Amino acid sequence: MAGAAGERAVEAHGLVRRFGPVTALAGLTFGVGAGELYGLVGPDGAGKTTAIRALAGLIDLDAGAARILGLDPARDGRVRERLGLMPQQYSLYRDLTVGENLRFFGRLSVLPRAVFRERSERLLAITRLAPFVDRRADQLSGGMYKKLALACALLHQPEVLLLDEPTNGVDPVSRRELWELLHEFVAAGMAVVLSTPYMDEAERCHRVGLAHRGRLLLEGPPAALLADFERAGHPAPTFEALFVAAIEGAAP
Amino acid sequence: MIASRLGRSLVRIGAMAAKETLHVRRDPRTLALALAMPVAMLFLFGYGVSTDVDHAPLAVSDLDASDASRALVRAIAGSGEFDVVARRAPGELEPLFRQGSAVAALVVRHGFGDELRRGRQAEVQLVVDGADALVANQVLAKLDAIVRAESRRLAGPGPDRAGPPIEVRLWTRYNPDGKSAYYMVPGISAFLLAITAVMLTALAIAGEWERGSMEQLFASPVGRLEIVLGKLLPYLVLGLLELELVLAVGAVAFDVPVLGSGLLVFALGFLFLLGMLGQGLLISVLARNQLVATQAGALSAMLPAIILSGMIVPVENMPPPLRLLSRLIPSRYLVHGLRGLLLKGNGLAVLWPDLLAEALFALVVIGLATARFERRIA
Image (cartoon, rainbow over all chains, first blue to last red; front, side):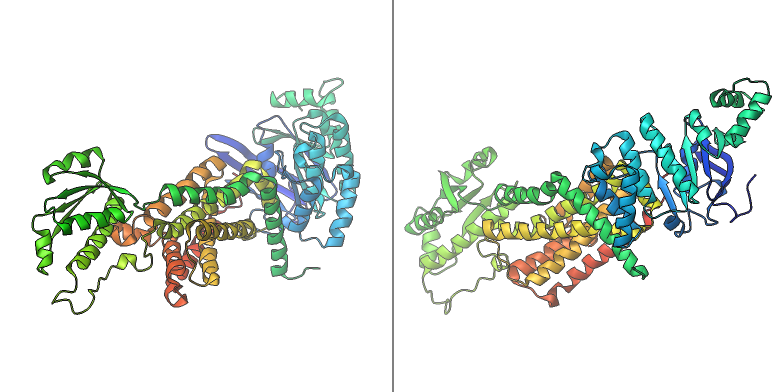
């Protein structure tokens, strides 16, 4: 399933990570190409966050290898110039305003002033955060906060974007906006890995991997997965039904 | 375009420092911790923990009852340092000490006046309550001085006294009034700087962990040393402000002089702060949460600064193992250096070992903090 190193923008090969008695990743393997939106779908505790952190080089692996653009994210600092991360938890500065957060992350990427101004204006416009530029991050709604986090992760125009449950706690309207934004960036050639516990979001991805207990049970384009499921004798299949069946070993 | 690696690094350090400054400005508690608390503590220590002895209760046993002995007691009572609270026989002094109604007793034996008249050495006995060593030392020194001066005056120019007697008393050399503030202010400055500096940075990095922002920082191109230096800078400025403030309060409220060069005071404070801020960072890197960092920070800053710095207990009086240990404590060098600078006007020629020791400590802790600062979330 995994392509040769360097071919894919994101490579997870046999990732293993244990936390004491808990095995968070048990040989997780998948790959994502440029211009592809990959959904890591699974319940809480499936290892999604650990997988995203491993890809960002933020944790040590017990076995396996993560590669971003052919580089080891845990060892090679160059990865960070080309990678964007939007963690699941609140990770911005809540006592700083929208504009101050953007400026801070822009300066960490050492964007020239003119470039920063142009990109931040564009990101503020498409996230519709422009009117709130002077509002403190802790006074934003859940959806606005996520959009700000996304904007901060996109300022340096990464080639690879990792998003950990970006739609968690976001209202339906903002959720739709987030997806539209992501599709826009993917169309421009970005490789995106996104984790979500919501099965209904699977069909918005180009390909999905159904994660359970640190490994993938199923993988493929959402329509093809559903079609296989239907052929196996499940009329009007849903991802939820497919996922439950996969966990119980009844999926195709 | 900012091309060079160093240039890019400086931009990121600047970004960290600017962000940290915003945090400080948004959180008045930090400013209070850094500026208001030290001033309050200085007053508390300067006045409340003053070891100056004024109007110490003194018991007198005048067995001689001569003109000379009465004059001696008058001189002591008139000095303002002592109040004569009781006159007892030598055997009845004990209860006064036990009750604490006297801290010292002067016993003048029979024949005191006669001896003086004959130009011979006269003897008086000083009994001091040693339970409080600090008070005892001062009482002893002051009584001793008054008695000697008075006895010389009473004796007049005797046949064996061609010139004025030379008294060498080291403790009065740079602090003639024996004011404890002179001695305490440099020590308290070190203590206050140590505790606030360690706390400020201990909170700063642990705060990133608790906020969850460390994950975002680690995924960004900012380097570990850049994070560490960016965090240090604003608190360094704040700490230097604090030092100036404490010294200014010391000078205005307690008349502590600043005889040495201001530049050297700055250098001594700068290097000391660098070490203390680095110590806070190291704790913060290891603790990862603000509660643990606060406690570890407070203890690791406060205890050595109080016990081993020479702030209260002179380094020379420590048992050898502690004296050795005190060499690892930057507060010791700041206290020593500051006392020399403020009270004696020492220059670089005397001060350089203190500066060097502080610089070494700073280098080691900042190096350790950066090395132990792993770019890993779990």
